[in-house]
Amino acid sequence: MKTVVHTVGQEARQTKGWWGANRWLVLRRVSQFSILALFLAGPWFGWWLVKGNLNYSLTLNTVPLADPLVMLQSLLARHVPERNAIIGVSLVLLFYMLVGGRSFCAWVCPVNIVTDCASAMRRKLDIRGGGDMPRQTRYWILALILVLAASTGSIVWELVNPVSLLPRGLLFGMGAGWLLIAAIFLFDLFVMKRAWCSHLCPVGAFYSTLGKWSLVRVAAIKREACNDCLDCYAVCPEQQVIRMPLKGAAKGSSPVILSPNCTNCGRCIDVCSKDVFAFGTRFAPKPSASPGANLPPQ
Image 1 (cartoon, rainbow, N blue to C red):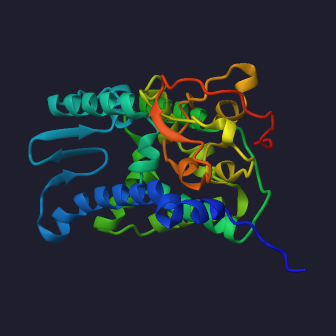
Image 2 (image 1 turned 90 degrees about the vertical axis):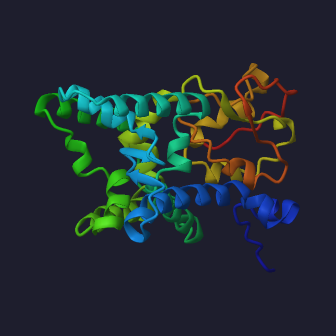
């Protein structure tokens, strides 16, 4: 008898077509590569729509944008920020407080492309198990880099931050920086699932604090239709945030994913053949109760 192997998103592709099962993934890649292209267009082609990098940029010589984490390190290092940097940080803070802080991780961060590739290859090669560590580790690393900034008087983290290193390296050459990016990819692939983005990255930890009360959220608006295929669990970089919104109706849990660790990547929406998930606001109405099936432990 021939064994039928289920692949993640297979039912969604059959039900909704390729575009319906990959829409948010494609839009994310367009966003990530477009942002990289804007930074590279000036040095490479002389099209200076955006000047700078992910730490600080000036769009059309008018709109400043600045990384709040870099600003915080700078303040702890006792540096006095310029007016444009303060304006830029304020704009970024306002934006991510509305749309969700970790939307940065899914829609902007270039390292996410690397870790997503490792995760997809891990599923394709059926690599299971591996190491584990508390997800809170990233918050301890965040605290450490802030202590280093305060104690050394310099922004030490930016010397090795892969989020800044990757686009900077594309402009000026990465040298040994490629070893760091390769190490993240290989660690995610062979050692531990979603190790960097979900357990270690202090940038993601910082942005998660910005979106604690953000308006834009993913919600399990049709959780009663869930058929327990677990595809959403397989693709979600923060699987623990799905559990109660999807399966907590009996306990009166909201269907809205309110965890600040949700990246608003939309992959759970893509791969669900029953259209259980959708983007909405944190005030989405509560649907009817669903069957009491449980997701596997994280």
